[in-house]
Length: 601
Image (cartoon, rainbow, N blue to C red):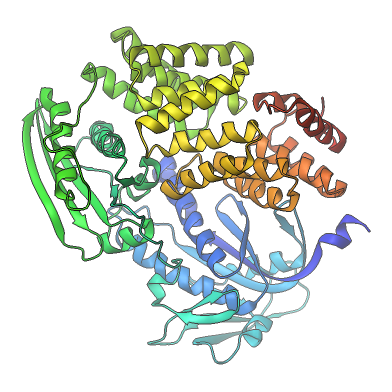
């Protein structure tokens, strides 16, 4: 049976486009890109909540598929309402707005790329929509059950580019005073307010006190001090997370609320935590004022608040003091040793700390340019303080990721450098969990899986809420063939840090675990999630290809090879060596699958 026959089907297609995206980019390319990507991420979540699939992002447009027209219309109207509310909370004018078109038609879906007349029609209908509007094909409006709270304004027959016959088009709206229904697996059964319809059911609170530290606001009026405010919040997160009696949302997830005016009760529900810590920093000359407040996410009320005025030299004492007060404010739920101080290790040179914080941010850009900049910052930091464990461990992470993502020109030398830097970081500060994390992941390249697991277990011991260490421990367990442990540790990392930019690593680890357990269908699901988050993540593609080969679906495997090769022109099966599976026979079988599907040796 031919590939085209297998992948051709009738579907409900959605095409969404950002209004005036070019003007946003011209104002500030970086910020515009971040806001557009965030908009598509939130819309993709909404689409998933309505049993749809966000297939791909094409520049400033998103394509999705649904089985039911009612789900497509519900998802679109729910998101448009939510996005309006979301944009109103932004403090600037970088507010991406969408137009949405929905059509029915026969399409070909392969490798998460959709082609065919149906998607072209959805795109043409989208162009008829007003900003924040939804326009649907006549057959879509006729398919939606009349019991649902929608109304359709007839735009008449439209002559659309690429179509010989006129197309009936309708504007879809929510009836006045009604709510958008929410879809579940059994049909449209629940109803929420339109602005909340994008949300999943609330997460259950952990069985121990839980807190998210939101990014501190920079009130200095100086953009250069932004990193200072971020560094303050990051250090508080680290100090709090070292308590085994607390559940802490990781930095990468908490910082997705940066620059947004938040509603405490809504954010607490979204993150599944009881408490939120908010704060602001105002720096003037050599003095700094920090305000912080702990909020009960259930009631929205204040548990504790304080203002600190200090000279800049006391910044680290100040961070410790704030952390102690936050912990003390919830000590009715947490049994702490009376009077035990929250200790910090060696006090770094302030300039070194600032350079290291800047480089740490660049780690998650996943680009060669960002890594080059980060290395320059860290080398400067080390030249100023050769005893800085933080600077050494972050530089190790940069070298490791540079190799892992395929950016390093001298792969082996770069891997060895990452390992040496991590070893030095641990020698400088044996109680720094991130140093042990860096050491643990650097061990993979030198084929020391036992050392990797030991270092990562030490990191988790030092910091029971370090999601990065848990996630990498899941990777190590997967490489070691300890399938259940691999999945368990990865799930811990995903739960505590659901918005981590590097979460595609966690998805691919779970995919590898299922692959090694010969659950190939599940491996495909998780590897596909990884590739959706990071299309240039070669290992996600590798798992997909090997799983399809093992299922004897060679056409699908070869199609993935083509997609991967287009995204990563220099890809080859030899890059599997970056993820050294302990079982040599399994490693060779994996490699054979890649070569059989068409990857060069």
